[in-house]
Length: 585
Image (cartoon, rainbow, N blue to C red):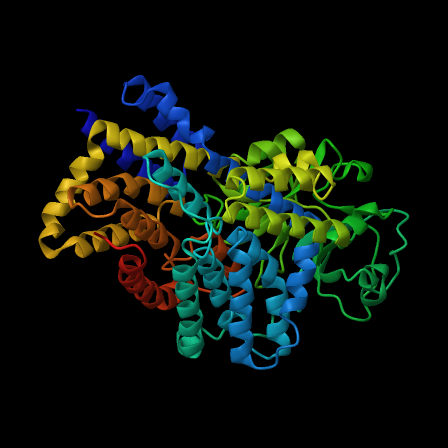
């Protein structure tokens, strides 16, 4: 009975994770409540995952990465590193190398967002379509995470789980060599086949610089504005790099030219960077049409600006803000919309949203916090115009490196090393304490902690042993390696509807029980499952892939075409290399 209940809950969880109708943290906590009420888990077992040291490691990494971003060091460094390359193939190789290197020590979504802007700018200078480069960027950020323990949350979660069942946790650089091989093969594959596998979308409409995203917004000219009577292309807006796309004058729509003069009550459809949009908000005689909040309240303690990403499965896809009653439902106003392909030429309220669109929203702290728990969007974070704080940025990097050295050499426990580094970055002011809490990915922490407990439930109920026996009955006759192959393929399939970490934690207890039955090394199975969950490049549902989907003008099949062969090669490598580094018997 317990086996049926646990497996039934697993199926329900996978379906709910895939549909994204309910937030992942709510699903996870609900699982723990049911398992505790039925007696399959004790309260201590249900919450053990939240008190483990790997949760401290994950939380500390969020703070340290946030500190490096807040100081502006990464943004400046990422922009400089990929400039000056003239060969197209060398540019792709170098970009993938830099991205993968960063991703070995940072969240891969952050790294992808960091390099996308400079990459698009360099593509223009090299006369190469960004669609030829951005999939390699996303793939290298994902593969780079396979090199170290902290490269992905999946690695940390798996290490925590195997420690909870009595095995030694992963060492910091234990997977470095196999991760380096996987990353290198990814780079070589892309260098050999980027011309054939990747699309060549038109280059003409790409924005020159994506370091700070270009947003579409609407502003209205009020009485007393100095813009009244000025020519559209030589006005003060032009000096602020605010591009006027269209003028709505009463019932007429005007495409401006050099002779067009601005008039009172004109509604201007404009494209600009967020910091320039803030300049517009502060200028007397102008008003952002969606804005109802006083200028002095912007980014105050009570009012926030937030960037949110429209994700696959969101009910907002192909619907307008008006149709979705965004303001009424969320108590937020959309100040601007960013679309990477730059082909917006209509009012933002009547614009049908696409996957990958980024909305700049403004509202009270309560409303912003509420949207963080929404399944309709992926919150990219509060928007802040960060000043480059070089000394604090360099100091944060030094502290991070010292923590890595101390933890990897086991001078202090890894969790204490990273917690100390996170604490120091807050103390020196590299990141405010309030901001450290804001950038924490609480949903992911709850998901990993809860799914670790679900693994315990599968073991307690006998569900993992039941599944392991059935898989062995099907594949065991062909040998241990074939059983391992089945688990690796299964975890890759599960990463399509689920997060990588959740998929790994679902498969892990079953795989380790199978290893015990086959008298194989459970550590080998665990590492193979972990790596398999990290090399699923088949669809664009990974956050890193979503971020490049728009600027690359990609279609779904572009990822299938490039990802299926590369993922197949990486699976083969994992199955060959894992038994070499960690013998099965």
